[in-house]
Length: 205
Image 1 (cartoon, rainbow, N blue to C red):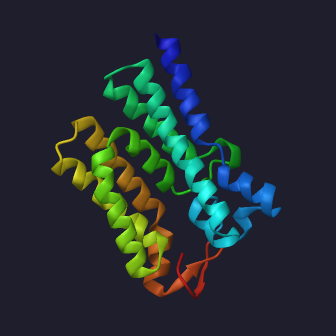
Image 2: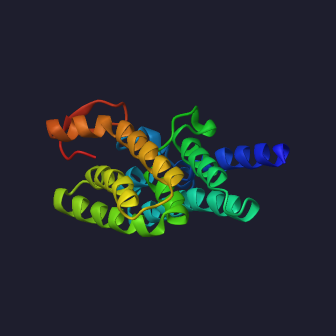
């Protein structure tokens, strides 16, 4: 049993770390996405740099990287929330700190959405609504991501979700907020983040 847990955990981390945005940009745009836009290899930056099709493809794949590990954990360890939490968390960590890009990956929003689509589908609905409303009102995907990351654990608590899943929702929310600190600084200054991490006047990410 221990070997199967180790194998599953390692698989979740590695699969979560597959840099889909980087690979899509390399294959179809012949560019290193880390050198363009915000420099982030996630779906939002791929969308800004390469357009809706590439951005949507990255979003779907990144979400599946979160959904599939949780589904596997549910099949292998039915009703074991601790394993589902572990596999979901490792997929998110694998995406953010991907071994394939020197441990510098995306911000984890799409992969987290995939994880919670499998774990907390009902609480994810108000979180998704918060994302859409905040992003549309502000014109910034980052604002929508921040709003969704705050709404998810709150809605999970209000809907009485299992405590381990609420704990994961709060942990991921904090992690996503930390990853968005550069974006928040640029938003407050009215700047956008460059690939080198320096803000410059313009539209924030």
